[in-house]
Image (tube, rainbow, N blue to C red; front, side, top):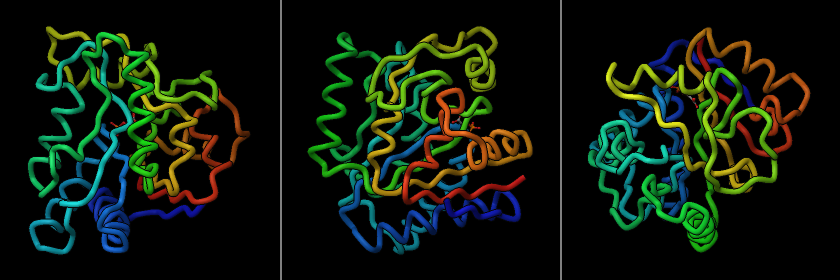
Length: 235
Ligand code: PGA
């Protein structure tokens, strides 16, 4: 693993955006895997600035997001589709038909998950997958204890994850119990992975991910088995 310490959150965001931008310059038709959460917000804002400056072009890029809450429609302010539209897609020249997220309202989640995997395959696979990491070591919504071979599926969120994400929801709203997420198996098939982590509260789990045993109890530890992973973090 290539581990890079950034000076601060702004530096982390710039470095991550430049990293992604470089792949877009290398291959304007690249397939990017995107993540939500507070950590990538700065990265998306920097990418939008690079797009506005004419440095990167999203017109031929295809994206697949990691996950989506189950039970939230795409126009719900807490849905990940809404987040991505607000933070990136509406700010850059992405073509809407090239944007892919799991459908939080899928009537047949199993069928929708299989279809998501098929769409990723048909696009040629994810070239670069951006990831955050949860305090419990989750990547996407792959919570501790899940199987490493799992593909896109409907999962139950842990109490820890619901508590961590409650900050995005209003006092009168409850965090959904379930989500659709790319599985660890899906994530591991990406050609390259960029994981970003911000803040001292992520240092302990980062250490376990990088130096600890590879175990489903720390889902992100599986990345030790991927041959092209870069971690950019700041404390
Ligand atoms: P955060 O979430 O960026 O809001 O810390 C990361 C994650 O849970 O994957």
